[in-house]
Structure formats: structure tokens, C-alpha cells
Amino acid sequence: MVLQRWQSVFLFLAAIAMAVFTFMPVMGLVTDQGNLTLSALGCGDSGVSNYLLLTLDCLIVVMLLITIFKYRDLKLQQRLCKIDILLIVALIIAIGVLWFMQRGQAIAVVSLWVILPFVALFFTLWANGRIKADRKILSDSERIR
Image 1 (cartoon, rainbow, N blue to C red):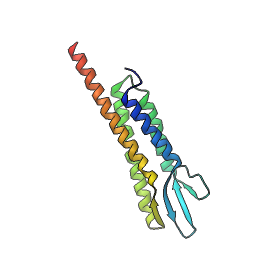
Image 2 (cartoon, rainbow, N blue to C red):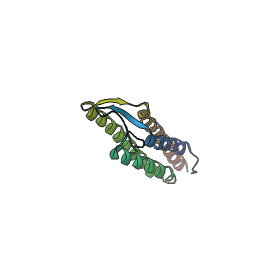
Image 3 (cartoon, helix red, strand yellow):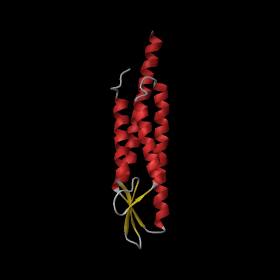
Image 4 (tube, one colour):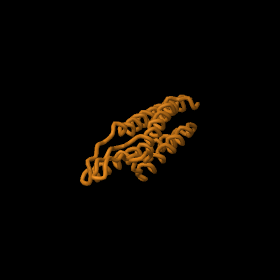
């Protein structure tokens, strides 16, 4: 097994998407005090930080990078990939809950950058499929020997 497999590329693209998500606004809030931007990092004058999003996002990026370098053990890599998928789904649900909670207090407008977790989920699912295909190829070659 080598590091330059397709699942490594897909997992790396998912990690990049989630790293970019850290710095991008998730939603805009129009309140009585003015316009606020909700993001994972909360940078800027009117940026509001959300520690749940930041924690989940950092955990996802670290787990994706760990998953890339566990290429020698495909079974472990596939399990880690499934954990990554669950974490990304949890982040998407957290964004939905935050949006629903903010609707009553302010006008909440979801940003276009919210698509990045879906992109990461797509790439992680694709990597999981490639890992499954590699495991099948290895088990078939073991059976032939």
C-alpha cells in the first residue's frame, strides 16, 4: 500500500474544505443591535464565535488528517472514515439547530459557505467507497494465493 491512493486525495480535499469552513461565515444575523456574522472562528468586528462549531470543525480536520495517514491498516482507516462521516453529519445538524434557534431572536440568513461541510461529506463518503474497494481487492488477492 502506498500513500498516493485516491482515498488519500479525497480525504485531503475533505480536510481542506473543512479547514476553509473554519474561517468562513456560517450565517448572517440581523438583530436590533445591527448585523452580526456567525462563524466558527468569529473573526472580524461583527463576528460572533460559536465554540460548538469550532470544536467540531477542528476535530473533523484532525480526524481526517489522522485517517489519511492510517493507510497501512485499511480496516482501521475505514472505521475512522465512518467516524469522520458521523462528525460531519453532527456539524451539519449543529448548523441546522443554530439556524433554527436564531430564527426566533433575529433574522438568520444562511451563508453559501455552509455548503463546505456537504462537500467534505461527499469526499469522505467517496473515500470510504474507495477504501472498501481496496479491501475487496486485497481480500480477493489473498484468496487467490
